[in-house]
Length: 433
Image 1 (cartoon, rainbow, N blue to C red):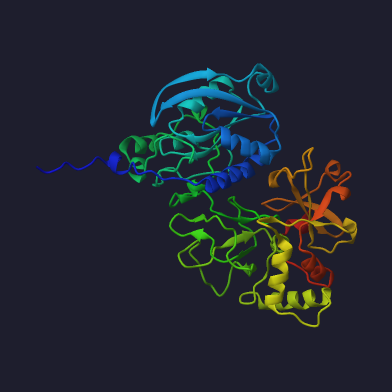
Image 2 (cartoon, rainbow, N blue to C red):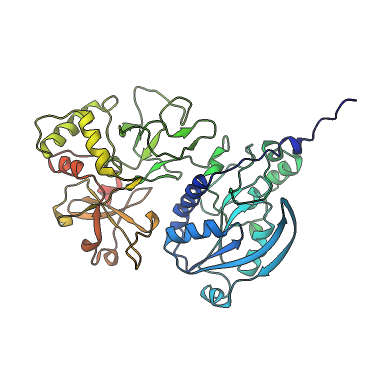
């Protein structure tokens, strides 16, 4: 007797596990996006899946008020009727004026959107965010912000849920079922959409507009945002070419370089197999602050000028690229984190192209996280606030008492190269603001 062919749904039901390390990185990437939408007054976790991402996001955004809304919908791996076991406390609801304004609701996974719709009915003005979305949930996770978009009708593997989630996972076949194709051709009415920001693994969507995790901040963090910048560069191979996602490590070589985005008309397949991982920087000042240096291959003139200034500034007659790389590697890292250096002079004495940061700490003296830190570029004796799109004028209220809180982001040896005359290429906004 011939065994019948398994259904398309069953063939696609292969689990796609996510490690805790990957889940933590994706939650932090979500925090970077939410940071631009705040401020928020409190975080509300949809339990149980939203507990861990809510804790990470609250830490990164510096939020201390955390509440829960308990909704039961899953029995093992099957979703059933929704039951509200616990609502938001009256005290938290008061913060949002009873409608949820200024409140941030976090879940780990958007499946069909039922849970989100129920919470939205309780707090209609709250901001809803999730780390991952499954194919059925993605029509409900169309964000209202142009900074986070996707292409309707794209065919992709089922986006994984967190390692802690016991919810079912589906694959590419489910994304192309007739019911979902019909949903794509008939979008969900805007009044029912959940304003959901879905983090990194949606970048696996082929042909979509979700950005890859390859943009570098002045703190050396690698995040996923749509904008690219003036320069590319690399730290070796740190990605999985099959999924185009980053590995656990953030460098595989002590040679951290900054390259030009255009070189002899060549085009690269980003995050390809057996090739270095392309990273992108707003400008050269950002790359230098993160611990990179100019590339000798595609930017030989700049690399030579940088080495000469680096040697002069550090009291050497000449220096090799290997010596620069060894020094920078000591100066840019504190374990796996960015090494922050004390600022020994006034901002007005720093050279153009140097970068500093206002790093916030909690009451116990612990650094609150990169999302609460603000990076500044020094140019013409004044500070400009760094952003992914360019530099912004620093508000007077933000600068009050700032000198005592500032730390140096640019590695000290690179700072001395700037003092010795090296002039990094700055984003045009540095000249217009």
